[in-house]
Image 1 (cartoon, rainbow, N blue to C red):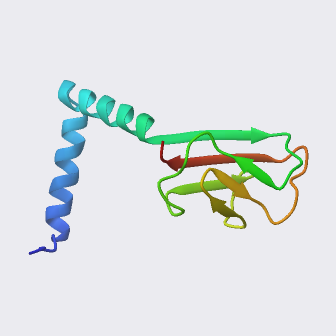
Image 2 (tube, helix red, strand yellow):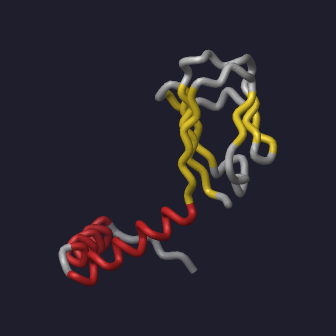
Length: 104
């Protein structure tokens, strides 16, 4: 059974989390979370490509576990097959592709 929290309960949890973050234990918890995120998520940047494909180092766990940015703007104008992003047209030499994804 799932119980919906009241606004007061959410505020209490938020305050408790803030208090925890201000302790040594909280700092260690944050350090562990950061390390887990670093091992779970892959961030890659590609520049100077004039092709219609970008090949990632690892395979994302799913097509929804990926964020793609073209020249700093989020985009969904691509297809993903395994490790390969295919663009609708060749990229320009000065285009910058940033990708963050869960996988490995």
